[in-house]
Image (cartoon, rainbow, N blue to C red; front, top):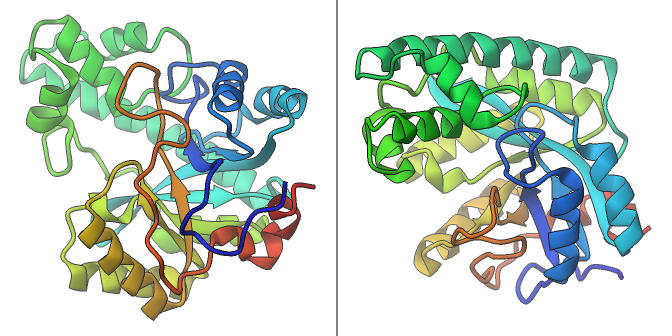
Amino acid sequence: MKLADTLDGIRGVDLHLHSTASDGKLSPAELADLCHARGMTHVALTDHDTIDGIEEARQRCRHHGINLMAAAELSCQWRGIGLHIVALLPQGTSSALDAGLEILANARDLRSREIAHRLEKVGLADGLARARQAAGSERPLGRPDFAAALVAAGVVPDVKTAFKRYLGAGKRGDVKMHWPELATVVGWIRDAEGVAVVAHPLRYGMTRRKRDLMFSAFIDAGGEAAELVSGYQNPDTTHDLARQLDFHGLYGSIGSDFHYPGGPLSPGTISPPPRSRVKPVWCHPALQRFADGE
């Protein structure tokens, strides 16, 4: 199936999904099964700072006739603000990106230890071990694992409260000091002939002006796209974001940021993209074969 060259009215596309290779709850194969059940035709597995689940997902997606884009959601920072950049990787990785993923794995380990140390002060004893137990595997830990540990320890009643009090942006457990700079991460993606996409740009608590500055820095580094829609969004805010992307000449991407079944989001669950002049990211020359269903 060939994708249309507009974002409005698009169906069957989700370019932001997580599996047990990072902080998702479904294995890559189980995620592919769910995507098939949900009618997805073009997807990207975007686990945090890793591509470990890609091959398993690719095999199951091939079985279902789903077009899978190799990808990862890479952590970085800009002006002290933690950002996520989705790397769409039609050519796979490169030596520079592989080295970057190793740097991010080490940074994530250091970050986890620092988060555990900080959360001890709010009553989470043995935080690292508890987060590892919540993760249920040896994969790199993320804030959702610490949120689950806080709930299990009775420090907070639920995950939402854990993020609101301790793990959300600017809170005690929001540790950014170990992430590389935005330009460095975009450089790794460019080296792999990939397309760099700003993930969920409305979630960083930036003013519109600051988001403009971030987009400018991103473009200067070689970035070319941003997520126009991530899960559910306010229509007016999304229209304004479309105007920003159009102003900066950025391609638009879409994705649910799905992590687990039973929540408000599933593969393909997004607010409708508005009509705009923003070109879909799959219209990028590097992604043409993906768009054509090859």
